[in-house]
Length: 254
Image 1 (cartoon, rainbow, N blue to C red):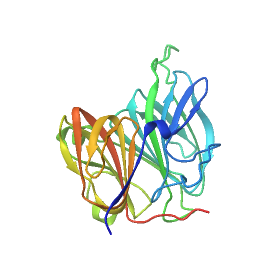
Image 2: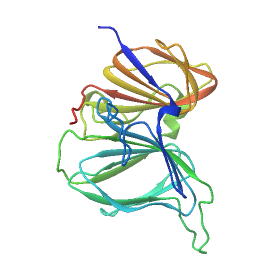
Image 3: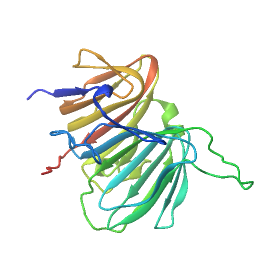
Image 4: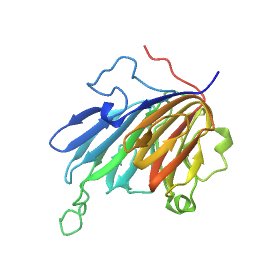
């Protein structure tokens, strides 16, 4: 069977807005419900969030979920009940495995020793969730700066649970059928999409032309490719930042 590409435009995402948060959600999330848009492959959540300074998500629980956070601008402060804390910035890959249960917070409010706010600008990030392949394990946390790899060009594997990626410098996830790749594509650079049953391509910055589609993918647009066979993606004249999920299985949600 031939590859099938379903382009989802940024304008079609659910938009949730509060006094401190702008959230653009590629899949049904929270109070938002859209029949037939619960997930793609193993990917349940792909939210593009902007948090104002001095605000954020206070302590809340998660269970049995692999959560990847990728910051585009600014810095996000993470704290969790396993004792991990840190500041997530552009180029720092971060994964939290909720496992049997974890409490955490994500805020844009780091403070200096003088009591003055260190983060005065909004933080802009993408947060993605995939189901683990094993439930009820101990929660864990991992982060890794991949800025040097990104400068080389091409795809950088940000996170993976696949055996073929075990020797790569990437953070691990508890999902043996999934991997997340990222590229800061140079102007007019062309790359190949992974060959996999399910591939989710998200344009975080700039624009890019995807083989097999008629239109350019711009910031916030996504392509859900079934039976992907190495289609090419070409960045526009200003370049592009692209996140690509490679998935060899899918979930079935009621």
